[in-house]
Length: 455
Image 1 (cartoon, rainbow, N blue to C red):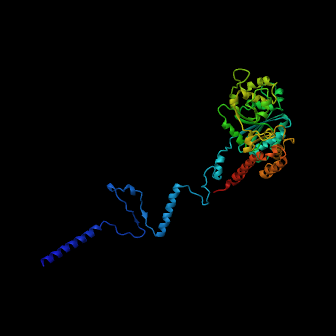
Image 2: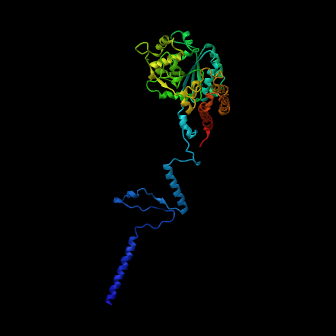
């Protein structure tokens, strides 16, 4: 009996202790939360009661029904992606629209436009006397048709031609006249006998020698003969100025590619540049450097400035020169070869490059960039390929479609030239001008017409 009482007493004590433990152990737990109430994710505590670093990024979250929770997770995932990647357009393949100056321009064209500052002028000089009015206007027309930046024309002409130039240029449509400014200068020679200079070669051609002296406010300049046609933007040839090294101050193309059939290498009686001489029909000049340089020469041991050198040089070699001012330039750069940058032949392509067989590799690969119709080939039937290009550009109505009114007529005319050596390589004449017209079309239609299109 006594043992039974002891067992019952022990069980009662244990039961009492168990109830006390259960009651005291649950006293610190909060009551259960209902749906929609906030709860915290369990966070392990470190020393001092602070959250452990591994769990410090957890934040309180809202308990939600399953469908809301799924939408919330999707939104959170999208937000995380947006932090890492730029927002894309709903249309695949299109980027987020640019902001600022080029906001309405297609992304692929932004770099192109930034590289074409409208305030940077390009200077083009030409000398026209006698019956060279039409040739000069067609040359200027080819320059305006294809160039991007604005042009300043420096036209040196006889007094009788000045009103004709002004009249014809005013007749061009405003969409083109706003792309250039022009000044017509009288023929003038600062040193020596003016009549001698004027008759040195073709009428007034020697005027080009005095451009650094006359155009004192012009830093750089492209000079071309009247019988030149641009088949690509002047911007491209103008960019050669950036390729000049510290001593170079002018650029010209070789007179010929093959010494055995070159004129200077066979007949010249005076010094000339390189192995075949250079042709001055297309001449890019840094006038500032020319004015500031003292040139080596064959007259005195010390250097002479450009203006000081011209007339004595002419006096010394006048009985030996055939091509006038071009010969004088060859003599100058013979003694100062470090001053000359040499263009590839496609930048001054002449009948000599195809009338004996194609010998300008650059034109075969890239097409002709600048066409030089010397030997009067625009006005006779000896080189109909050159004449066809001249006539198509002359007859092109300014605001017509380039392909319909210029390129296709040109292709048709070339069919009549296949009996000539130059006519057998039409791709040389057409390759670059086709590229140029495509660029002009894209610039006018895609950039200007499509500029208002917003992504």
